[in-house]
Length: 108
Length: 191
Image 1: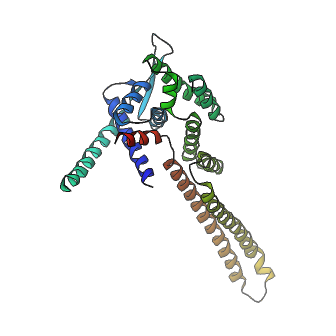
Image 2: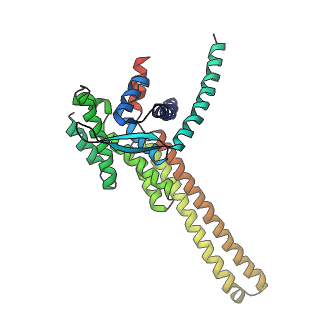
Image 3: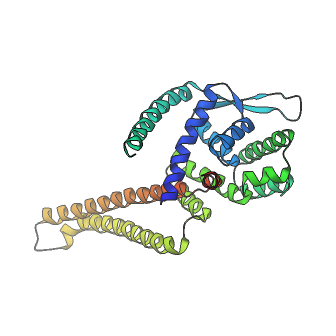
């Protein structure tokens, strides 16, 4: 059960991280995957199912960009709803992590 | 594992999804390989970091099945979602199967009872007053109506319980999707 909770926790945080990365500029799959893999140690294959889910939820949209080498790249960009979700989740995360830190600090 | 092997196993595992979805999904991973190779990584390394393609395909298919159930709640989508979760193989089938059979059996019984009550009530209401003598006609008719209402009520409750059980199974299945397992293991080794 602990493991299941961890999975759910990471899934929630993962969405927030993707929203944060995209709020700084549009990105393509590999760039997102490698940033998240080195940042929070996420499995690289995870990003694509997540992006599909976020696209289905209307948080991101895609467009193709011709690349000089190989096939054209699919870029992701935040929608209006995605931006709103980011602000909302960022506020929640800041409040939550602040509260947890306060408790951790008190337990020294 | 080579890039070709990974993609063909993924594609084989996705069979059954709409063709456009399969193309989109495999394209994502094809591009991932191309970008990773351009960044100087080997095919084997990339395949290893992406995880088991069979497992990935099962979870992508399961997610599609669950999405369908959430979009339209009909019996076929429900069956689809149940099989999608079972197909994940994440749940201990030996434990779950008897429970699932028991719940399905009870619900089937309830549905049959509901239909039977409705039918008996209808007959009692229409024919009862003429067949049963010695009781006031209105009382027999009302009793029939009451039995019909009881049947309808039972049917409605059974439907609600069915939807609830499928939702619970979907929630449980999502919780056990293993797409994030590599992430957890990586984190464990870093700590």
